[in-house]
Length: 257
Image (tube, rainbow, N blue to C red; front, side):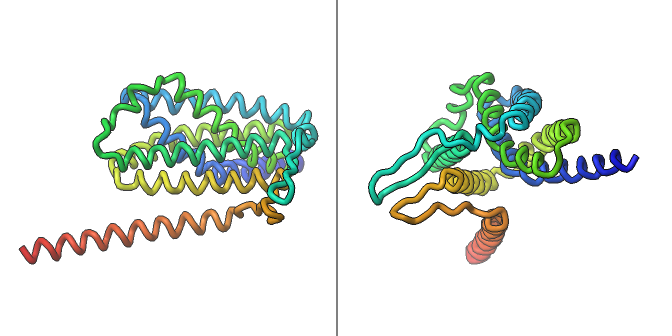
């Protein structure tokens, strides 16, 4: 009975951890699903997250079995005094995921600035299957930290798997609400994209740290979660102040006329 109670407490802690670490993943899913036709967006979110749950459990099983292999160096780069690093599988996955998120966020920001472009062009060109695939891939990239944290907290497989399933169901429930909020409040899309850009930077620095990467003899230091959430808080605060200031100017101009 004592062992079961301990496992249930660990399950609750892991579910909470998965939910906190899944914030950036949830934002990516909400923004990525907007590229699908409107009548398919909810299906894309549910299918992408649903399939990712099963793949996360498979990834959990693999990591539990061969976790040391993911930490073994695959290759190294040593270019004089310019760059040094020893890359393993874990660092390569995190680096690739971070670089892709930076590319995706900057591409969407660029499209927003190009007012003459057709806003529905991306939706027409992006197939449902492609979007679901990208959601699954990025879900797995984001899941590495949460799975490794889970392994550090417990060695009971069913507890870790249950936490993944529960957090996945919670993510499906929240993804639709976040997407609807962004749809009704289009101004926050830009804020969401810049938050996603910061997420990409965080992943790139983490991947560089895992690879012991040094540029001009300066080691890459990972962005801490505390710094990440502080930056997000500042971005949100700036957006709120900017919005209220713009409304104040609009009222003053209206009164002047």
